[in-house]
Image 1 (cartoon, rainbow, N blue to C red):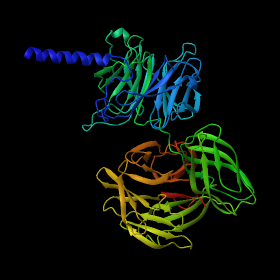
Image 2: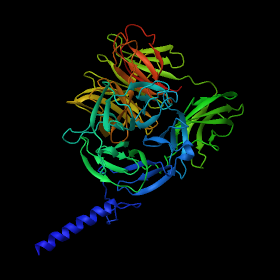
Image 3: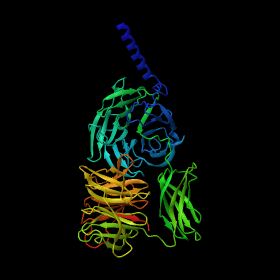
Image 4: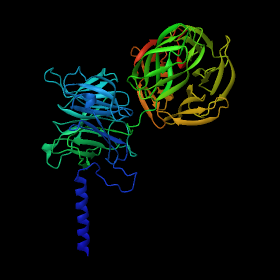
Length: 611
């Protein structure tokens, strides 16, 4: 009886091993459990297959869901790298093309959103690419013709080289980005950029903050032997590394721990696999089209100008339409990105005064309407920055023209805040609000119609500890307040009903010293004086977007943060180096100025008002 029992177990093991090595579209039979997964983080794989010039999408069970023909985009079979930014795919192609493409994968055919020459200047062979949340990274195996070594490039989304680093190995292939995500015991790979090399058969890491390269582990050896090791693809799913080995007769997909331990090998039914990327997002689902803001947001009859339209889900191609309503004609709509369009506008002399909706229609017929985003006015609206100044002895609010940085007026805050300085300032569309640090701990509605500030209403800051910092309003009229060091090692942001002062919700901050907060396109942003970065909140986690600016080598100490519909404005307060910066959504400084206020200012909060 025991002999038969072990023979049965042995037979089951042989059958299971045979099933894993079989070819076919699915390597697992359905077991009735729709939630089954071989990937703890779940999500999706996107793999390049060269024989069929396809990008193949697999789910977390490695079942094929979709494939696209990339040859229609690249015009070449030499697809080298693939990356996902959570909305679109990025492809790098060598051979006769040498370009990087951003493509939309929400239909049966890949749609090119933008493309640019591979770095540097189409020289060498660009290989793997990856996305770090803000920027692209690309590895190039170099060129003997141009005498250029293998390098790692950091790129902005237009392909401009931000930084470059010579690689410690000669023949890079796969590239992936690892974000900080340790397990419950604090273990995990270092955050940075990782790549595979097919000459050394090793995986390397690069730590951008250092900068520093190091060997991490060796690539897995195929069953046919070490000479068949050829790690062409590399991905990270927040828990495991995934390595594609592609050497004609030894095409395997490996799941590997962050320490380099091979956990399992999958023999997929694809003869010539290459680049791989992992994403938590199903890129077959089109991004929702929305229209959130326009800039400029007003015009007078008889004028013509260019308008930037912002939102989500915009697509390129013939048939893009933008409508501002009766009396406003538009021409030459231009696709900039999925979040921005440009259009030429003529406000006719007969245009009726008042606010207008703005409608955007994609080439596929999908459309969205932004309510009352544009206004026809009798006189031009001049945007202003309102800045809180906490300099000792001259606590004040300043009103500054954003167009030329001219100081128009200042109000002392001492009639309301006798012993404390202002911290944050916000505008609800009708009234201004400010809050204070120190012992007062209140938020005040303020009246700026007279020479002396008055406050018709106020309520207490909700938190017992910490220091109240920035304030802002969302599109629903709720007030948000950031408070630093509410508890040891942390800050907090509170959502408040401004009529009653009641707390509606709260969330932790990216660091313990949050300052400015603002909503940009319905997304909450926050800066932090310890972390020196601007962060966005996606509803569950904070993500660093760009480093806060500084001027002339002065210390970074970002305080106020506001949004003008197109760009951020950031106040940097270090006493003798108090400046205001106009900054693009990707962190590029567009304007730097020091407002001409009296004394030695110490800026805290600021708010942009488009009138």
